[in-house]
Amino acid sequence: MTTSAKTTRKMSPERRRLHNLARFWQQRYDACGGDHGELARVSFDRARAAATRAQREGRRPQAMYELAEVLNAWAEQAEQAGKRHAS
Image (cartoon, rainbow, N blue to C red; front, side, top):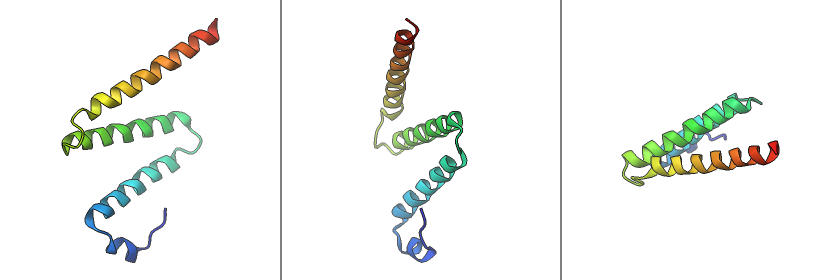
């Protein structure tokens, strides 16, 4: 994601904040290379940070609970797939 300094200066403060946030996470994803474990950690960190922000700002008071529900559902699916594979 390349944006010139001139374009960044013209952005509203909220748009600039979102742009910087996207750039921050993209740099972290890029740094993972082919390490899937690190990619999972970065993705979890990003989701946790987004949920924390959403709760703090009052946009989604149940954000952390929603994240937990999604992670729990994924884990259950993965566990079930492992059981089917082992049979």
